[in-house]
Image 1 (cartoon, helix red, strand yellow):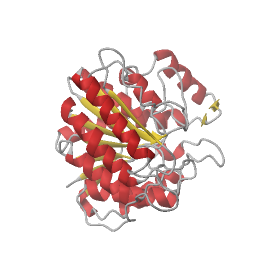
Image 2: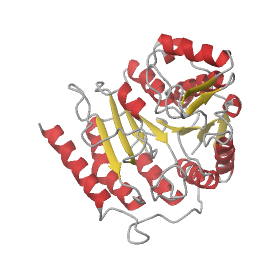
Image 3: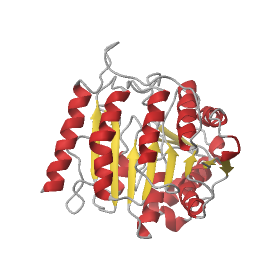
Image 4: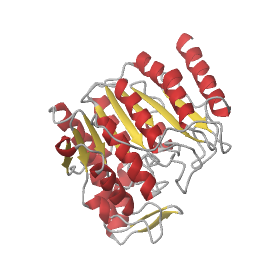
Length: 346
């Protein structure tokens, strides 16, 4: 199966500061992973277009967009303790914001069965009026907003180790978008508790699985089987968008989860099984250990393209103090399942 790989030179030009974990090296690791996925001619690279002002303004305020562009144009600097920009950053963010909408058009034209968008900076923390957590514009939310405007029903599955607070906020009262996040908790940005389920009119359209440190792949698989897949079957999405953060890998320096590249392969297959071919887009979010990122991207793309590959074994609880489906993480999955069933049956 053909897979689109979105890469743009502007993404390499964005700099967040010397020694910052969100660096251009991340994209070089992604490209290496893509080349190792064994897809050959089935991997089709394209340079995504920039987003229009109208497309961005469906998620971000006009004032914020103008201020961000002006700040970058005048030399950049630090937006918050974690997030900095240079003159090249707005162009990078703009192409990241347009990449998903470009991929939608290409997938609708039958160019591939899925798309993986390897652009930076990431986006899922960006709020309507400000940058946050390395993120400037919320790429996945901008794509989802474009799709629901056309009458589509969108599920966003966020597998980044950090909760996608910006994406959740964008659709917290919108019943046309199902947002599901599996993340480490407590951890930056401090949101994503089980009790955050959406506002009136969209109750149950936000699902959070706040896992403790050292959670392993068997708990993630259980979460898919017990919570994610049933929720998607009830919701009936026409598009799947994935916030593909690879910082849940056990070697990532910013987090404390216990996944391997093999676990990302398992999750990708489950996402493939619950979605429609030609209606699947993966957006690069986190992942800050170059080799772990490379391996995890390779595993993900190999599954998207139905390629044969070798990767790390899947993880499970029972050693090194890891917490899997039989421990606290498993109880969180059970509580999330019960909460969803109460909402659905009320």
